[in-house]
Image 1: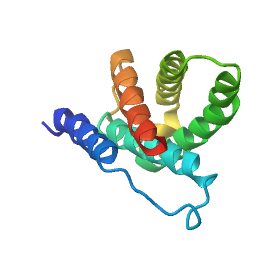
Image 2: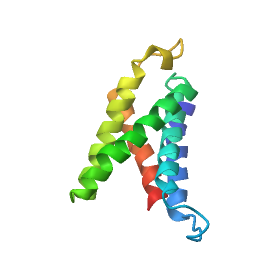
Image 3: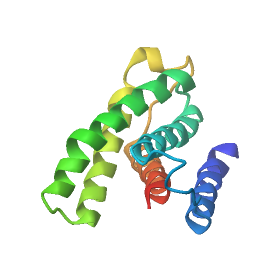
Image 4: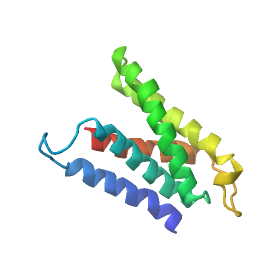
Length: 139
């Protein structure tokens, strides 16, 4: 039952963040840190959902955080600098995140004993939920 409620709870949290954005004075918060915080939040949300699919929590957080930072700085920012539309860029990032989740799920160190695999549509859904959360933080 918790497996089906978890995505709804995370979507609710993302919706609340979008409805009630945190407003901080510009002097109190370094603007360069905001993307990193958004990417870590995305990794944590993805890892919580992947934990229900029998992947280890802390190692998958570290792998997804590193992957998200690399994807953001080496793929997303160059796409935005080349005037790619935001919708296409986000769709590509969701696909890349889903592929990273699929690849990471095959690494034995990240799996628990009762791991059965991650289906492609689960990885797409988890990547989409994570990107919605990071988008809500960044915008």
